Image (cartoon, rainbow, N blue to C red; front, top):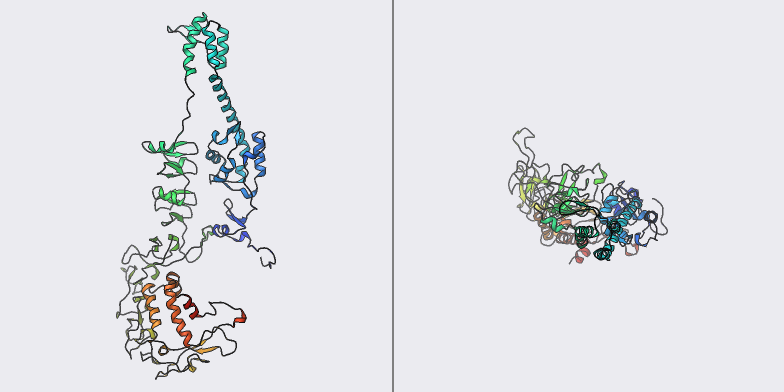
Length: 585
């Protein structure tokens, strides 16, 4: 930090990023899900494929796998784990034929967070040893079945039928087959020896069905079978069983009703599972519309179906893990999630931030921003708290000619004309000549004289010329009202100030300003700023603003820009409004 970079790329230190969204956006940092800090991203490394490990004991192979696992491979997700284990064999049997890889992953994942840290991965050699023992047992069982199918029992049967089977040979074969020669005759008498004919007949009658019966087929549970049960159940891939409640299926605690499966909780899977909400704190689904038991995140974002911390306070959260870059929009503005809205209901419905319902005593407001942005405001108790029955909810703004005290009380296309003895809401460009007005824009022709009365629009005698103060900007106004002396954006030779044109200098009594005001009040209301209106309506509003400023620029002799050889190009500090307006056409 603070050093001059002369070669390569300068990077901001990873530990200065306090939130996962900023940390993960960089190329050199990654988020540690255990310590919840941003750390340097290790050099990239390829996955270790177990099938490529040289032949050795399973324990030795496991140790070698661990030695080849670099820091860049941790924490490891199930997808990477599955790729690494693909094709690995024990005793000639594929690993996935011995155990479901998801079950093996779950056994290694001690904290059930869906990721394997280096300490959890260290249990791999022991797990391979246990699986190798299972593979040996499976191989031996398969070998016994193969000996039966190769005719061992059939050859003995032919010898016994020919009279060559004595008691000793029967016992030897029985020991090899894992059976017994002690049987019972139909009368219930136990026969352990006797004549060869009696013994052979009894053994054949007892063991022949075993030789003829095939090996029992493995029972395979399918999600379709779980879903067909009454009542329906859900397939858990970890132990390949049907669960009545997926909370019994490890970290796959959400249900996918469409496919009768237990799945990992996310905002989408929780919403599909009975419109529940996803709680990132405990990685589980919570009841619909209720995040009260989600630690540190008790607020429901109904648009994204996620439990969140309070996001609408003006100051940042004390929990830096809750910090996130989001829009802070007023009611009526576009949104994607509830977290984009900080006033009103703080809900995003239909892609728009929703206000409080007017005249609803159960929805009291605190600010004008809580109310619908067109035609409503949040008035306080006019008695200053003495009215015990006053309820502060959203009310309609006052219409034209109604009494008022301030602009916020009047509908958007009016202003509270406080120049009158009894202030009233007056529409833009509506007052006749001789009427007292607090603003030029309330007068029919857009001009007031020196005494604040609406008058015929004057013209400037000094527009675009140098000045030191407003007194230098003389106009044709009969009462002596002057224009305004403005600073130039740039100057290097001439004076630094110029006289700005007045209403009479503009075409059609400044029609472009009228268009600009009309668009703003009808679309953005009383409480959106100009910048917010530009942000929402973009070029539609921006063009009207630039047209108004371009006309002023032409009448003022502008633009006042740095010389081209200076190499200074900054459209915000040194704007050419006409060029910008032409670019939008």
